Image (cartoon, rainbow, N blue to C red; front, side):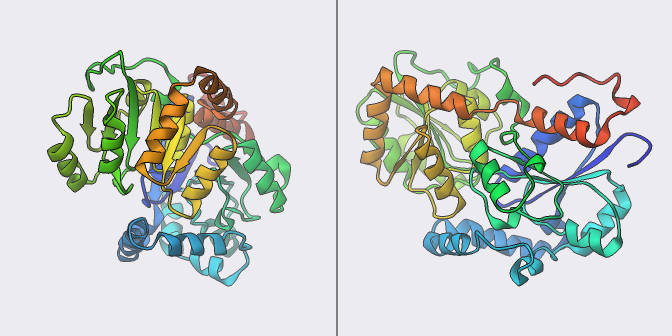
Length: 383
């Protein structure tokens, strides 16, 4: 450990937006705790920019053109052990850049919000001693996350904690903390009037296409939900400008349709809504749970997202639909049934962890940074 303020390096990846959002949530919580020397590193983007862009393109295209292949590869490699050759190769990517970053920053702790685990091999190579932390950002566990060289795991649920332990990790190294979210998801306030004006007599459905707007069938979903006149729809297209243009052209004048591109005020939009239709990434699902929103998933892509959806469906807080009519029917059946809604809210409350980022940072400080005089005057953590 350095003698001054602790230094934390958070490593993420830009496949989707979730890993970055989790990293920013942790950064904000560290700052709130008094630890301000925090750096974020997109290792693949820095070390192999061409390969990073190519694999990002393939990843995004998999949602449109080859979802079954992506799901097959994900599930076929899900139980891989850390010493297998394929994981050894994957975890070697970016080692030179990472060594440069470690030499330059001299961090006291490394956090992964994406399973690019070059650090254990680098530590073995250099003889350095640094605590390593994994924060699993899905409700499903892939073998890439599990490595005996990692000192602590933070996971979404108690079920996932037990799965990590079954993979051979000692139980005292795994904490069911929840997935870290931005600070605005931990509060109930926020200006929503400036975002859109809604009819208080109608239920509001939030439709989220993902950060890159890759969820399929959005126009058909909107038409099915708007056709009966009972609902108003908030559609968030992410960075997909073509999707935004098309929806604006075709539905923009509908009085019950409210369209957004990429927005940072997701917490406020969720506070306006009665349920969410979403692509089932781990961060968005966690945001929905913290916001106490029943979840509807439309045609999830095989792999971690389908597994996320199936897990939450098994817990009674999510429904999976394969066509717009089925989706509209599921929403009607839930929103018009107060008794069933009450049961769903009860199950949501069992799963939601609004203080995940604070819980993780508090635990890290207790594990590695205390006692530390520099923390004596810092803001206290609210759990």
